[in-house]
Image (cartoon, rainbow, N blue to C red; front, side, top):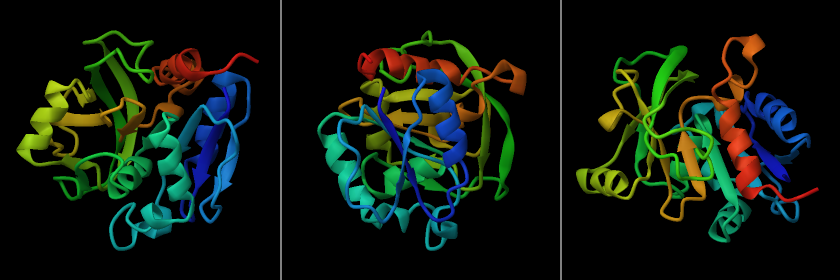
Length: 224
């Protein structure tokens, strides 16, 4: 699987993501700087990683969404390339209007950093093919602005179209309907606040995130 990780000033999970991708796929991803205007040819997966792009100035993800590379990211997603945004990456995708809604300040006005239980709501996407619908998994979260909000019509549409793929099993940050991860209409773009790249090796304490990357490898990876 040919993949790329977008790197912004302030990204701090880009290396974690690169290591997770290399571990699961056997191929190291391209690291693409935010000022680049083009992406490597023939990508199967693009990842916008977590961190604090541009120091979270203005709004989390708002400045990164306007970076030159995002035009190429949008074009690739429009052509069906799988796109994953994790934590700050989810915020960037929402600000870039690649996903609906917005990520607001946590309801408790505090940074949340702990392992959380999630329920898999949809196992029919490329991102969740290795999970079972209704299954409970555990992934780490680390965010201050992870409170997902959207208008009622949008929330109902996301629910009705099966685009809510991960939901918090208990209260974490105030997110509407406990939403932790959503898909775009085409199903090739996923934004999620929990960090699957930090849960790929049992020796590190958690491994539930590994199946997300394994599923992607099976769904979109090209034969060597």
